[in-house]
Image 1 (tube, rainbow, N blue to C red):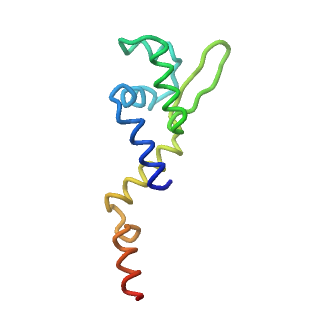
Image 2 (image 1 turned 90 degrees about the vertical axis):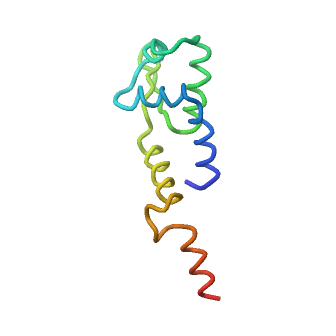
Length: 107
């Protein structure tokens, strides 16, 4: 994941409803109608939110009969976590400021 991709994901999760959706499906996959029960908006609005979450790669969807199930894409979530650790300096050896210092030292 790069900075542009992280920025795109952050734009998607900047909405409180989408954050709540992610939390709802974090333990197990849910049908769209089960997700909708937790909100006070229409099914088309839920579809819009789910489209953004799916497009960002944070959510997998699968059809089972007439139902669509949504679940977290754990691999994508791990990429976001990794990028956050890099950006906020959890791993100082991979931090951009260290790379800049090394480049300056090599000059």
